[in-house]
Length: 473
Ligand code: ADP
Ligand code: GLC
Image (cartoon, rainbow, N blue to C red; front, side, top):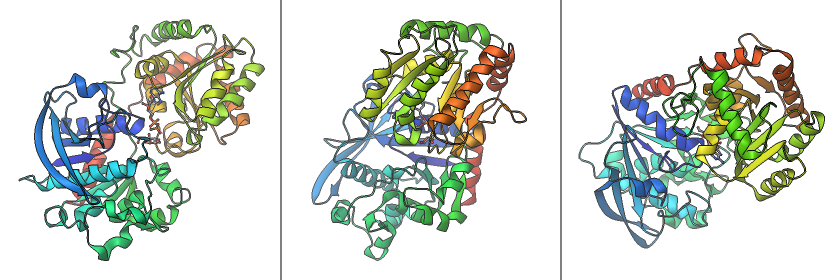
């Protein structure tokens, strides 16, 4: 089967969060299972772009509003990622350093989707399925069906749309409808949600199948989806939850190139200690104390706003006995509050504001506990990486976290779960972890070994996606 994934991120070309990890891994596993999987993302000016060799495969032009734009499609030459990676270059629009966050993002991603449809339309041999991810590609299923320039050849290709995060839907005003490629006006209501053009809603309405990244989140979407709850409830029949996997080659404590000290389930005690010592040395922390880490976007969804108060309270409760290390970036007020903790709590708290792939790997390896108090978590990959590295997850029971972490007090459990995104619940969870660390010799080691054996590889999910694709051929 030949599948084309269309997305805004793909690790290591471009990653802002878990979407990048998924698009960099799922297609690889689909290829390993005997299929042809291709990925197309915008050509941003990232390091990866300059490190690889590319060949030009297509050039053409389209309109955005009344403006003519030229685009080209380039392909990575060496198949380094284990699948064919294509980039769409649109001069002045896509070729920027960041992935998102520009005032003209709506225009940028409409032009991208327009170019992708136009390019696939030109293929002599069409793919069996087009799989789009998140709102930046949400108009593609609609354009394939109703875009005048595309429908003749693309309307019969099945489309799947995966919701990685419904908190962001890309809505924009009808006044900007001129940006869209010419399409059948009879179907314009499919673009609308609450008086705006809403790419996420459009995708949920028009894709042949909708998936999201855990069964738990699929259920939550009908109650909480930033205004799209009724739509998700209405489209329930064509929707399913497929839990993300992880790329066990990239996230592998035995071979991780970002680590100085490698380890396996047999050597986890020593390996973790060495990585923890290295990590604590860099941040001036005491490696004899339990180390709690947080990695992620500093936004309300991740409950990062609770971290400053929760950390201060936990350290006050266990003075000189615990340490926290935080890596992330996002809302500047949260960043500043966290930064301000480092001086008064020197020796107990380390903070790195920014994005650093290498440091994140060392943290998964060196931490004792990975804290995820998320208010919303469609799947969450951090807890899965933590497990792979023998680090125990402390999570709020929501979305994919609820589906993947069993509390150690329950049968077969290994992590710590709490119910509410509050400072009090975080403190209680940390208390439980501290007790485990200090008071029950051997227990922590036992759990570490247990969690490293859990198989969260993409193999399972890749099979489930394939079954879904087959059901609509
Ligand atoms: P989301 O996609 O909502 O941000 P996920 O848990 O699915 O959350 O994935 C987050 C991914 O981004 C993980 O690979 C995590 O390690 C990575 N990540 C998040 N913030 C940072 C950061 N500041 N530096 C390095 N990696 C980060
Ligand atoms: C989103 C979600 C996260 C999920 C990731 C990959 O960014 O917030 O929970 O793991 O997508 O699907």
